[in-house]
Structure formats: structure tokens, C-alpha cells
Amino acid sequence: MWGELLSTIGGITAFGGTYYGLYKLGFHMSRKEQIYKMNDRIKDIEELIEYQQKIEQESIEILKEHKQELLEHIEKLNNHKVEKLNNYTIFNNENKKDK
View 1: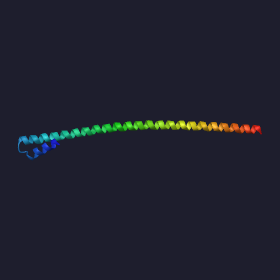
View 2: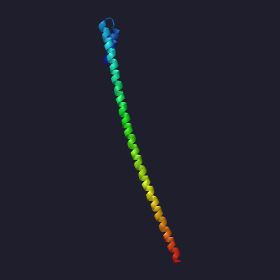
View 3: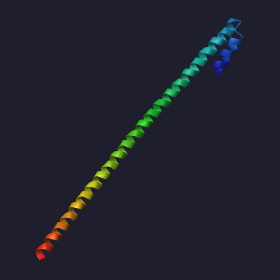
View 4: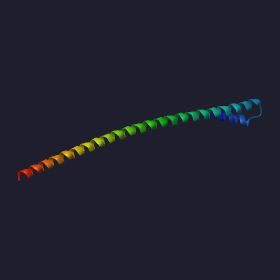
């Protein structure tokens, strides 16, 4: 902001060495401000990348936990099915022996 102002004043009144110095100083300050802004943007981008990686890692962990819960539930269902099947066959065999 100040760099642009000084650069403009120096550019408009560039009749002497002092005004040219103001122009040059303003241009230099303006360039520095732009560099600082760009560095801030780079830091923000790096923070966003880290945050996104953290979220992705947490999502992967949640999905793995959910997968494990589903596998355990499937195993319970399979075991329950086998028990029912065994009880049914035993019950049927006892009925056949009684007749």
C-alpha cells in the first residue's frame, strides 16, 4: 500500500533525483509487500495441505474401524447360522429315531 503510494508520487513528480529515489523506494517497497503476501499465501496453502492430510488419515481410520465392525458382525451371523443349522439337524434326527 505505502509502496504503491510512494511509487506513484515518485513517478508523477520524477523531475529530480529525490523524486526518482521516492519512485525507486516505492517500487521496492511495493515489491516487498507482494513478496510478503505471496509467502503468507504459501504458508496458508501448506497448512491447508497438512489439515487435509490429517482429515484423510482420520477418515481412513474410521473406515477401517467400520470395516472391522462389519467383518465381526458377518462372523457372528455366520456362527449363528451354523448353530441354528446344527440344532435343526439334531432335532430332525431325534424325531426320526422316535418314529
